[in-house]
Length: 103
Image (cartoon, rainbow, N blue to C red; front, side):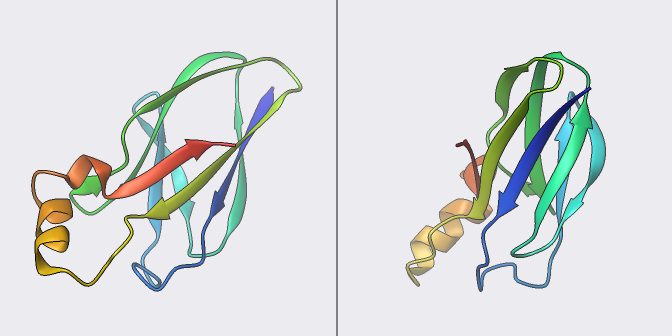
């Protein structure tokens, strides 16, 4: 087995809302604000996506080997307080609402 670790940033946006984690299209759990969580996967190629309500991150693919650990950072969009920015991320930019990056 291999492990991938997600470090969710501690942010005001979505503070009280868990984010669902999907690997290869399957919901494998949630992660809370500011939490770090490990997930077990089989070695090979996987895709990961984070979702909150109708919004999500972009899909990210990664390869992992047995006994290997990969680490990812998860956070929300950078809210600048602008109405148009918020509207974009809640509509056509909804698949970029969350940021999921390999560290």
